[in-house]
Image 1 (cartoon, rainbow, N blue to C red):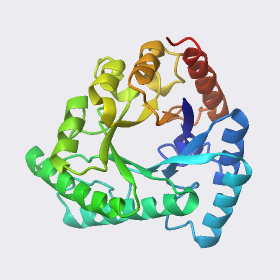
Image 2 (cartoon, rainbow, N blue to C red):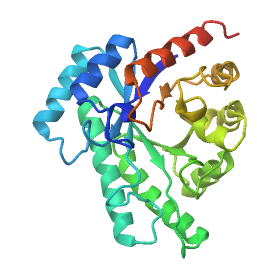
Image 3 (cartoon, rainbow, N blue to C red):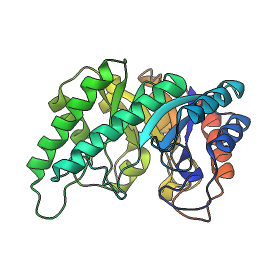
Length: 279
């Protein structure tokens, strides 16, 4: 399997500190042994509007020098401009669509990254769920049409701990089908499945051939295998369906007490040890 690590725990999002420049993150994750990093599009790593042509060229050089890839691009949800693809505020939706396109273009420029992760939005008090669903589908269709021109795939994520529109495996499948485009696929995060008291390996089998990405985290965003979740079943399920995407750690946050390198190292060691015993 291929392993990747999300840069949130090294960045200002969702917790302000500790935080590290992208150059340092690339070196550390490569030294720990990751095949790729998942680039969270926030400071100080990769807010696209602060990452100019010279900076992008330097990041690309460092990736090649350290023999590590960008496995996926993750736009930051929330914050000042909102970032809600399902917002009742049309200006926010338009901003989010453009931001996602800009993140996608940055990923292509840095490392020909063709996987964009999508938090499908949320609805606020006074907004009807069915309206938010419609706005999300329309917005995703526009992003997917733009992505298709460069061979980029969108991975829709159910995010039960953070949002209220696409919370479950079934929600994600339904939205994928309603968007109805060939380059719109699925992903899931074990943390959200655990929050719903569901079995994460069930998500693997239900999403099956449409599963192109996965986030791994134990309870409370701890390193896999350190806080009570059984990752053997999850890893076995990924092997059973022939999953060929990145097994990506999204853990270690949100707290200034996070030790990013320790979480990254433990996560990789634990999952590689499980992979070695799979049938």
